[in-house]
Amino acid sequence: MEKQRENWGSRIGFVLAAAGSAVGLGNIWRFPYLTGENGGSAFILIYLVFVIFIGISVMIAEFTLGRNSGLATVGAIKSYSDRFTFVGAMGVLSAFLIMGFYPVVGGWALAYILESVTGLYSLTPDGIGDTFGAFITGGVQPVVWMLIFLAMNVLIVAKGIKGGIEKAAKVLMPTLFILLIFIAIRSLTLDGAGEGLAFIFRPDFSEVDGGTFLAALGQAFFSLSLGMGAMITYGSYLSKKENLVENAVIVTGLDVGVALLAGIAMFPAIFAFGMEPAQGPGLVFVVIPMVFAEMGGIGALFGIIFFIALAVAALTSSVSLMEVVVSYLIDQRDVQRKKAVYGTGVVMAIMAVLASLSLGVFGPLPVFNVGVFDLFDILSDKVFLGLGGMFIAIVTGWVVDKEVLRKEITNDGTVGFALFEAWHFLIKWIIPLAVAVVAIFGIIDIEETAVMLFGIAIVALLAVFSRKLH
Ligand code: PFF
Image (cartoon, rainbow, N blue to C red):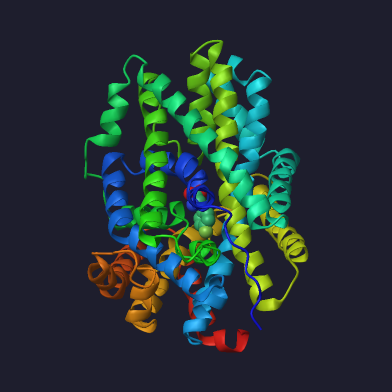
């Protein structure tokens, strides 16, 4: 009983939607602050190595599994191996975890569009810092903005692939590119911009440890939307005529391009104004408005443009996260799209309310010593995506027949993939090993060991009980 499966409306629609999923808060909010915290260029270099040797290969694998099976995450993995169904379940859980904090930051971006109009840039630097601190810890306001952001997701995903996600991405993604280039040019033409460029482009390995590698690997997976089946899901809607490798390279290139562009937009300005690069998650919301404030009248305009771009980027990513859960419910549980979207939205809203309040009203959780927001972040980014990527590589390399992969990737031999053998070797041996090594050294070096071990325990439980689950 074959169901008619929806397809992307056009090639450019798919590329923009997949790039829209990849390019998000990960590039513009997270990449710059991680770079700032991890000493700059060395972190970027390690991240780029992971993107090139692990990211592109895993993306090709995800597209291939999705299109070959014609099913979203759970169904796709299950169709190759019952034993590995838990990898799909990990993906759905990752989507919930990321959507537990992502809409909170998406809501901040929305709020800051309004803040840009209502005089944020006429405040002193201290005033701007205090405004952000008071806003995110304030309780009701950030929760309301988060709910507005989540409601936008619900509206888009409820409309389905062609009518909703693809249409939105087609308009919003090109807008984002243009906006960022605009801000980067302004930043580069400030006096003293050179120091910021040196910070992100002159390698300095003095601050690198196992934690840096884990952060860079987590960021590579997070930023490329890998390790949880988002790209399996998007690939499942892809036509048999598309060149998978070419698409993976384009999407990865766009994602890295935007991250570097965000870095180039921010660091020269941060240094030009003598500000501190290691601000943490507040970087975008504190330092950037300070920069705009120093620009005089025109700053407010840049501010509005910047936060619209941030909200747009966040939205085209979060819809793909929601789609992972929704397509699972449609494919595996026979739930109607609208019902699936509303149900998923309610659960995500509850999680995100807790995450938002954890920055103010609630303190850190006992045992873990971090708040709910950080718990969701660390679990998804440092545990689930990395291990998910590792298992996706293992399933592709060890479970799926090599000739099936070759046929799918080369569209039945009609398009060439000269590096097929090298790709298969990477997927089968190098990537699982590399991820395991990074994870082990990361656990030793980072402070949040309890959270990491808790996450690994959940993965182990899922692996053991997955057959009962499905
Ligand atoms: N790639 C997105 C970003 O960089 O913001 C986040 C993300 C989306 C992660 C979808 C994972 C995912 F499946």
